[in-house]
Length: 354
Image 1 (spheres, rainbow, N blue to C red):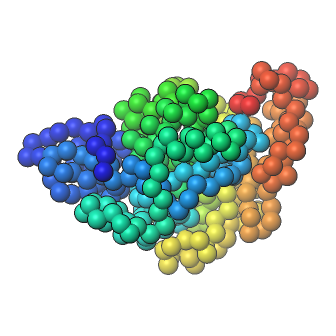
Image 2: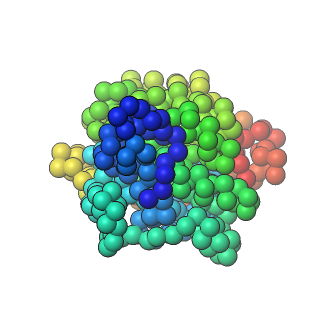
Image 3: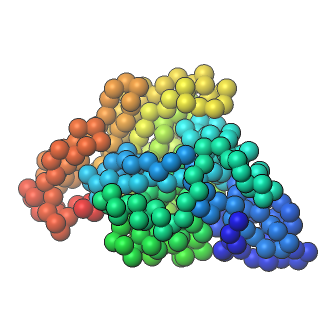
């Protein structure tokens, strides 16, 4: 148990957590919505410091997915338990709000931490040592929502920066300004899951819309590189009008060269019965969404449909239309970009970090 950061002490030993947009008010002896932060006698504690789910996973950065940040690099993926959402389509439900995540968090809250299921206990310094020893380039906080274990992520990101490693978040984007002000100087890139573009659509998925768009702008202004992902779910978040609104907003507020990753929905991975009867997203549905994005002015749209054996992952220069990153799945086979981040063919300044 590790004392939390970014919380406010209120009356009667009550506290208000400030790390995510829910800003939970937590009574003495209770936990927040994410189940990972507990009030003990008027002090807030994180239950997750040093608690990693399963094991450390090595991935190509493209798998996260990041197509414009450090292409071709290898990243060590790190996650824990708990989440501030309850998404019914969650691919990682076992480590976020399902089992064994919930049971593990209940044990930790009662200070009966062992045995925990699918758990590794490790400190930030050890992770950095392992990444350096194996010669990988960075660390991804992923699988569950990174901001809910901000204390661990912050210490890990600071050490990574000192060691000349990059740190990325795969996130629902529900952080607060306070969280970004704290970790922003040590956070290099984020991939935000835009589950739709309205409170209504987020509610359909049992998620929390909050101030996600505005805080995405704030993250970019702090110098954090952004990519956007949308898991396209038939009948849930594929309304053409809302997709058009989302794409236009990205163009206007984040820029037309912001990558938009469209992914296929897999009902077999969903934990909720109602979502299990929704069909797979077809390639045609993904292409329709991509066309909406292109008409709105987005220059880089990537499609991933593993059940259909289809992907569209090459990066084209928006100016000369030539391929500047040729990929075989997640693996770049050719990179035609200068060290200054420009197209080798026409000199266009690309929104890509090498």
